[in-house]
Length: 429
Image 1: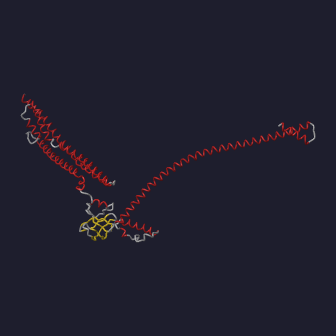
Image 2 (image 1 turned 135 degrees about the vertical axis):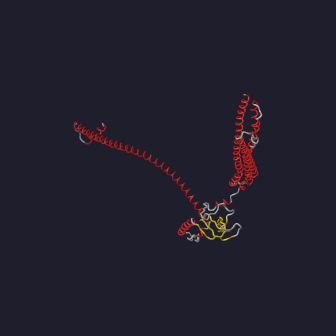
Image 3 (image 1 turned 60 degrees about the vertical axis):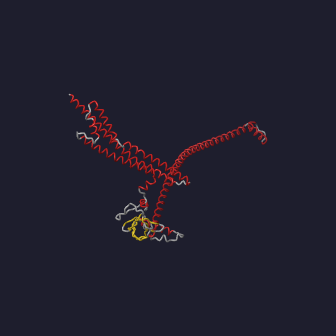
């Protein structure tokens, strides 16, 4: 400030003539006042600018805080939307997989229907002329005709078609017979005054008599539908009989069957013998005279001339003599019943070894061959269990029946002992 005043005084001394000191002082004061006013004005303006800046800063901070809150809300919303998108995507994928399964099922069913319909010759009843079109020139009209042709095939599949058809008989001769066809499902015809099931040969476009004849009888008064398009009838006609089922079991199967027959004979003989013995014992219980044709009568006869001291021992001895006769064959039946499962297991092991040997020699890992070999190997186990389970049940029945007869002998012997003791006491008195 002092430098500035000195500089003004120097300029003034150069530009004006010398003046009194009072005038110079007055000028200096005026200049100082002007500078102070200017400084105050600058300070005031600076305060105003600072207030404006603070206000702007406050508004900016407020805006920033509001923006941050909105950002937090938006981030939460984004996370929620991402979770919803993820959930919807999973639902979409699940629904897409389900729809693909449905589409595949519908397509497979449609292919099967078309193949079966074509195989059963229903296209010859087509009135849309679709099959006569040029396959190399396909347009929208042909696609529409295909739709109409498929609708007609669906309608034909629901009808009973009665027409004269060419049929190959079991002896190989070709004849023309009146046939009844239930859509693409199955058909039959009257051949030599008897009704027979038919199957369609798509290669030759003729019908053939199913041989051997299925066991399902043809009823002309009802509609018999095979949902497998005749495959169940063919499977039924080719079903093996009991001999063909047991033939793969081989020697082990024969042994199991022989054991089953032997066990059944033993059971039948012993069951009849125990039944006869039970009837004789019941007859003896109703009569006082001892008979020698039953176990209880023989026990009574063995103790008729005994004294009181040896009566108990004689009763036990007589009962012990009858027990082996009553239990005869039961232990043998138990042993026979335990052998078939072991033979079945032996046959299964041998069959598995043979199956793996064949697969190893042929170098073929065909799962169908392996499954067929395992199925035949398990046949002996199945046969052994089928024989053993009934034999075990029959063994339990025989054992319970024999135990019941032995209990009758013991009860009647105890009563006989008490009665004999009472009679001897009366004689002694």
